Image 1 (spheres, rainbow, N blue to C red):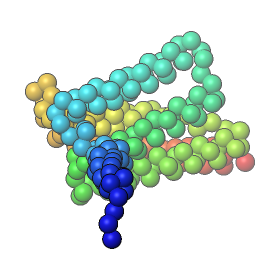
Image 2 (tube, rainbow, N blue to C red):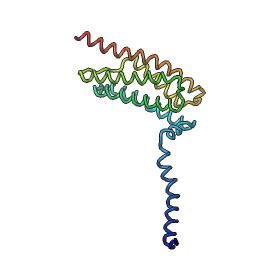
Image 3 (cartoon, helix red, strand yellow):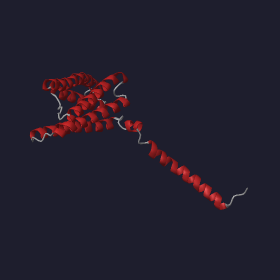
Image 4 (tube, rainbow, N blue to C red):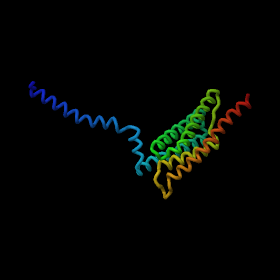
Length: 200
């Protein structure tokens, strides 16, 4: 069956539009996904940028807490929310580093221990808050947080930085942070339940 010139022109226009639109839609759909986002971290320059951003966030958190204590502006909601935001940041960073392979699969147990402890302590704080109590960060927990932040920052830098083997330092501090995670987690629960038994 013969087709008119208008039909042929419409068909060609449709094919042309389809071939031109497809790459754009594929690019929009497929680029911003987890694997490609992780790939953005992998270069040395990108690693340094993200590393310094993490360091800046950690330093800002320290300054924020210091100013709150110095200005006597410490509040119960601050004691609850500040550690919660820290835990979310740390957990996200550890999961991404594990997915990137910067934390080897054999060390995934350390990630599980750290995140599991963070969830447990967050749950404990929720229970305490429901009873009118606030579980503030202890001294051992603060040391753990420092080692944890050093570990994560070094693992994000990954490549040698300032002449130091960033990846190896990161793994060493991650091991130390894991041990401190267990110790401080036990301390939180022991203090909470010990305090409850004394007040009962």
